Length: 209
Length: 209
DNA sequence: ATTTAGTCGCGAATTTTTTCACAAGGTGGT
DNA sequence: ACCACCTTGTGAAAAAATTCGCGACTAAAT
Ligand SMILES: NC(=O)c1ccc[n+]([C@@H]2O[C@H](COP(=O)([O-])OP(=O)(O)OC[C@H]3O[C@@H](n4cnc5c(N)ncnc54)[C@H](O)[C@@H]3O)[C@@H](O)[C@H]2O)c1
Ligand SMILES: NC(=O)c1ccc[n+]([C@@H]2O[C@H](COP(=O)([O-])OP(=O)(O)OC[C@H]3O[C@@H](n4cnc5c(N)ncnc54)[C@H](O)[C@@H]3O)[C@@H](O)[C@H]2O)c1
Image (cartoon, rainbow over all chains, first blue to last red; front, side):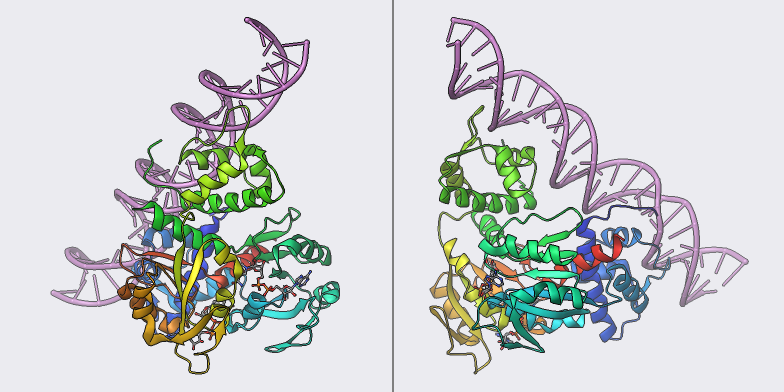
């Protein structure tokens, strides 16, 4: 199957499937059907099969999927068969929470550096990594071959920090600030907007009644 | 225009438009066209107009929209013309970061309580609110008329905490744990999955080259 | 060997969302 | 009053995503 554009929703679901399969492996499950995966993560079985079909044939008709094997395929597809170096800019409340989160390391995301401007924060240890001054951005990105920059600074400096990350050679940016960022076309940008999430809840609460 | 189902993507964009309009108000801008909004937040002008059209006619042909007026409409649509009481369960790294985030209060989200099981955390002050023991969940939800529960506990207890929130009468849940939660049909559930976000970046980095 | 009871892969149909394109309506200049 | 120029609102068209339906295949029981 030749496909050039994978729906983003598909990629997100693949990530969720992979986590569910990991859980099943821990429970000793060896084989699973699309219907069971679907039930486990709350989508339709056709959706599961369609998502997988973008990338190949991983199951056996009449039988289902081997959990461990499918998990391996998904990890490969998601690019998690290797490690990614990431840098966090902004060692505030959110940046610190992210830095200390074990779940990222478990999936192969390695925090190479955490930078800030605040002298009170510089020098603090967050897990294995020490908060360093922002001036080291370029150096750290280059020497550690950092691919992903995480932006957890106040909105007013988010674009500035982003530009520095892009100039330093980062290829992807995860932005937590509530600001629309401009990046060159070849840079992958994702926004995690926590306020928007709460506001969607607010909308649904207010609108559906 | 009679519409029963608003695309979720539309709601998310409305939230973003509203924030952009707020910024414009601060800059003293009085009138704006759909094209300028579109440019400001990175979508097409037709998209902006279509999103707004679900809810009414807010502009003037040939002229555009009055910033302040449109902002007011959007805040009303999003249910932000009132306050919402929220409760955070899990005063760990993420729960604390959320509790201390000023941006939520600015948009009318009022943190009524923060609960945890860890005796070391109970009693700590996070902003104006003190961390309290989990046993107060039912009491706090009911006495403060809490509508939204935020789940920032480890995955293994997330479903348990969710059930308690639902039983206490919460109407919507924002889940940060990497676990698929089951809730009754009339409960609004949103998942914020930070790992998935990083993994989508990983996928794009690995796949598009 | 044959039947029965599954399950996947995938084209086709359907639904949802986005984009297009233009009539309708408003402004400002002359 | 008229014209030249904008921008909205909205059906219609297009594109994207999801769901359906079934042929192909497997395993196990008889
Ligand atoms: N905390 C949350 O729950 C939350 C929720 C939604 C959005 N956000 C967004 O995430 C971002 C960070 O939020 P936070 O709560 O962690 O804020 P924070 O104030 O705790 O942290 C921001 C950090 O960035 C540092 N900083 C400022 N300018 C910098 C620069 N130029 N270079 C490097 N570091 C710089 C500050 O010193 C500070 O340590 C903000 O944009 C905020 O709007 C946070
Ligand atoms: N920190 C992050 O950046 C991050 C990123 C992605 C996902 N998450 C998810 O968010 C959740 C919280 O993460 P965290 O990093 O804040 O973890 P954390 O361990 O710092 O905090 C969890 C808190 O929940 C409390 N808790 C445990 N059981 C409880 C119960 N039954 N009732 C009430 N409180 C209870 C613990 O005492 C602790 O204070 C986890 O599910 C995690 O997977 C966190």
